[in-house]
Image: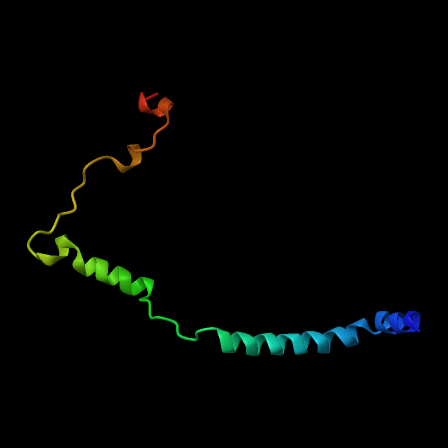
Length: 88
């Protein structure tokens, strides 16, 4: 009798496992709903945090203390190879 049951289960495994998995999933979903806390605390977004940091920056509080853009060094000479530094 057991060999016939095992052969039936083996040949119809796809039709048997889908309903069993669905039942297990529904039971697990309902248990999780009963046990877990559904409250998620508010957290500000990254854009909101960045906007707050920018507005709290000390340089932006005083409108007269603006740092001017000054050309300080040759931009193309920053990462020169040793062979180009000597002017070869």
